[in-house]
Length: 241
Image (cartoon, rainbow, N blue to C red):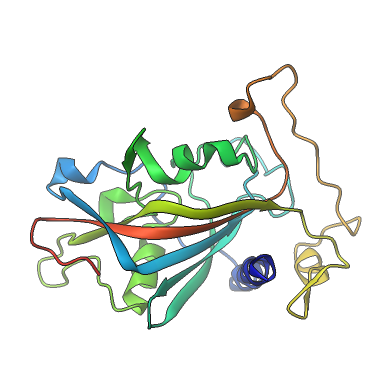
């Protein structure tokens, strides 16, 4: 059931992104370390979680992605007993995800999404301000604003909260969609058609890296599906949402 829901999220998200004719701009550089700018506390929220679905195949800056939906994904952020804010995105370049060479390699999830260093969680999702990462800063601010969590003080224009991933609840790789697949009554033929992919269904390339025996350095196929807990960097005395 979880796989059906999250794949519907990414399919709907990418379709809406394509219809809009672009992606959110901004962000896209490896984030600054919040304590360097005075945000010294990182606390896991008991109220905010997220589901991230991504085709984790690049490259991002060295040509077209290796797969038809590569670098595109969708995120849904939920506040407990509240609303869910969701959007499509394209991974920003120069982020903690790198060039997405390793596909759906679950051994790299902490390095990509969670930790600045081993045992130091809280990599920002994507902003605000100098904390931009794989999600654009404007989109990050927009999504949390929809949940009633302002990240920037509008009076002083100072950053008050920086959302980051505190913990991965679950992670899995699900197979690439085929035209005949259906999730919650939405056929994958829609996304394939909008992307003008031929032949239909597409042939996804095998990006296995020859001669590599270290599994952490190897490519794996599939869409990446993450369920995560969100935390917030903040100055002392700032309540955690």
